[in-house]
Length: 162
Image (tube, rainbow, N blue to C red):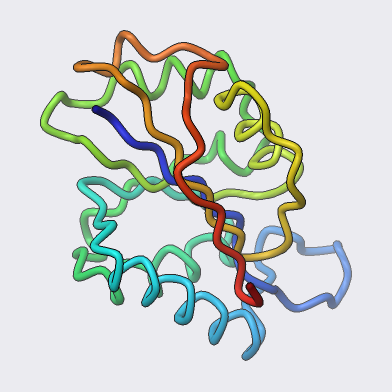
């Protein structure tokens, strides 16, 4: 069994898009990320690996989750493609390269990409993805190279206000 946890970054400062890459989390975003990640910790959903977009708001969200889930910050992998709208095929290819000892991978990114990835990994997904949405998807596979689009099972969909 392999599990992919998709996380849309938490609420970020809306100060315009001249410097979108460096937008930071708001206080609400930080609180939301803490609340959702603590809920995951309570449910014992723990990452073997965290991969994050290189954008500041995604990094900050990943850092909060890592702290709540006792994952070492220096082990987070930062992937610039997650900021620049990675395709589903490229995302699946990235997952195919994961070491087999990784069973649960958390991936932090942005909409619309995170929404599209959820929709393309699960057979049917039509939920909203507000900031800090966290979607757990399981695959009944033994190794990452077996992962295919539309074969995932929705395990959960957490949002800060549900």
